[in-house]
Image 1 (cartoon, rainbow, N blue to C red):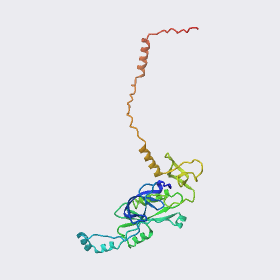
Image 2: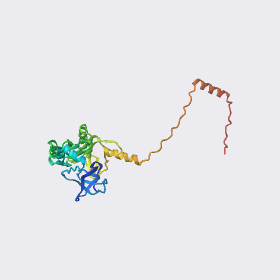
Image 3: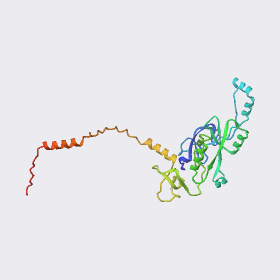
Image 4: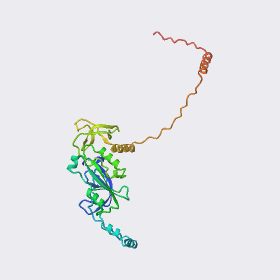
Length: 296
């Protein structure tokens, strides 16, 4: 099976009507795996992948509002709004992939939309969808706001993309949840280096310097792979999850009860000398007879 490091896999949960099984009309909802390749698989097992699922293509929203008394009354009061919603379409989810020109430049723009009534209701869209929402065409422009981010593509992109997301969150809180794979679409065509805050040894020490990414073993020390032992490295989020696992597997001994240590009382020096003098005088001297060994 191919190696899927944690930095390349994201676990998400699909809503009803968002995905369907590949080569089938059967819809899918629940937890799924999103790979950095842009493919999706049902379940959360990264070793034995589940059935492949695909995003449902753009469809015209049905906007069935029912036929009850309240619905009929609402339709009479707001006929224009009902007509508007009936003619709108569901916004398609679209993960735009970089072009060859984007890779030559080293970055590209990624676009997203957020439902204004859902703080974490982000979806990734393309530029065409953004323009239609801004021009108030096809989609419910009252329900969404749009934004974009500059996404780095070459030679160590995690730190740059993380910094860009942190800045963007000042305007769009929780937008980082839409882009969890910080080195998504990255290519390596030159030496990789880290200046800190990114890679760590397995014992938790920070690593600064040149590194390379092995296709099966992940990041390792050194500019390129060699046939001699060299250390594995962990990205910061992988190191924290490793620490959590260690904490859960190693039993913590019960606390040792504290023992009170009594400090000797402080006796004045003069009293101590007098006590010693008195003891020396009152103790009779004892003459010891030397032991004689036989001369055999």
